[in-house]
Length: 320
Ligand code: F6P
Image (tube, rainbow, N blue to C red; front, side):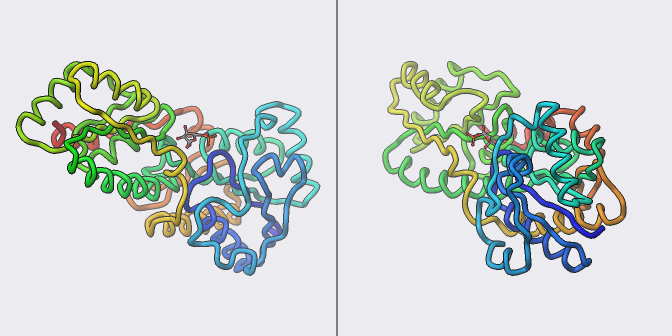
């Protein structure tokens, strides 16, 4: 293999820059030229790319976001878009494409594979909903962002006897809300995977304050409802001043955690090595500490990863 390309696609996350760096350095170490494509698949269609050198990736490891930028490219879901993308990559002499992104991005990769472009996908999404990997890139950093915000919030909540409803991202997956509830000691995690009863939660909050607890934190995944709606419902029932914090895109930014930096290094190098061995049409994953390769057909057919039952059990045991 003489030339490969790398792109970041879909929602950004911390660790994307570190992954690009790992791909570039592993490529160059193996005598492979690496092309960086700007703005995901949109850059493939627009032929927006640059040759990456060690200098291009110098000083990028610790930065959040992605210096190649990213986009959600609807044209890549169409047949003419996929055809044009494959033609452009072939015209560039690309013999392998590393796609760093979530399930939508991996669908694009899978469409390119039968069109003659060997692809290797890296799971990157704060939602942690991609199957066949214990963790996706960016999840740990996003959780650390949430933890920092909630720890700060608890200080002020307890000074005022307040209840806060904190809304996390995650699309239709409750992982971020659930994991951060365990890690911050929040009272409740409202997640789309399970029904919840606001009347029962409100009654329990009232009991907590009557027992002398000075704050309550309720994590709500965006897929389970809006923080403001939940807060209003609680206030209507028990009359407490209930405030909200919507974490939004803050969760996706910032310097990657140690875990994500090492994961990025492992994923990036493994993607280059797998392509060089002739592997293609696969996704790198992390399973019980080891790297795995799963066919993209399988990862995409499986759909969203179910929540870890161990984490659920933990949250139930420790929660209110
Ligand atoms: O998939 C990652 C994610 O951050 C989701 O958690 C969220 O629902 C969505 O992307 C937000 O997308 P955008 O940045 O396009 O608003």
